[in-house]
Image 1 (cartoon, rainbow, N blue to C red):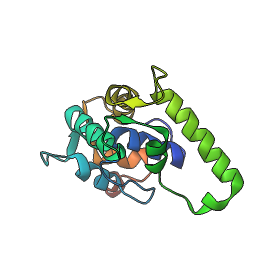
Image 2: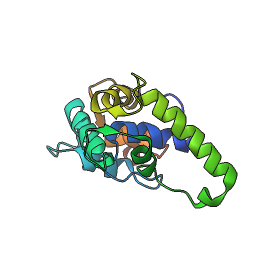
Image 3: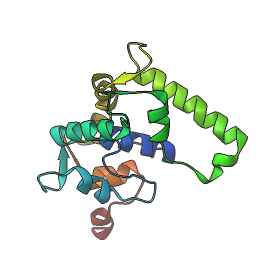
Length: 156
């Protein structure tokens, strides 16, 4: 990526790619996110592996198993923060959830289908695939998190 992203945006992009298939926290490295989705162990995430991760994420968020996500399920899937007791933080998080839900609920039905979820999440793959080779590797995930690439640092 041409610019360093803010931590919250980085997490949102990676979560968009891998959803809840694996826990993603700011301290996780790109390689841990990669390992969670790399079904064939080739050390990259293909579009199909990302799509499979999105389906797994959707199913894990869909607590009642009815095939759609409601606001409560989406809210429950978000990590909590240490500042969650702060009223202003709670309001900001609720506003962000409302915007996120509205963006995902493309047909304004009041819930989010798998198709809506995938349509919203799939563009994150291209955002992470810096070199356009159709796969996401550990270096691209680390860059998304603003972490230095160990191999690049060694070659300096």
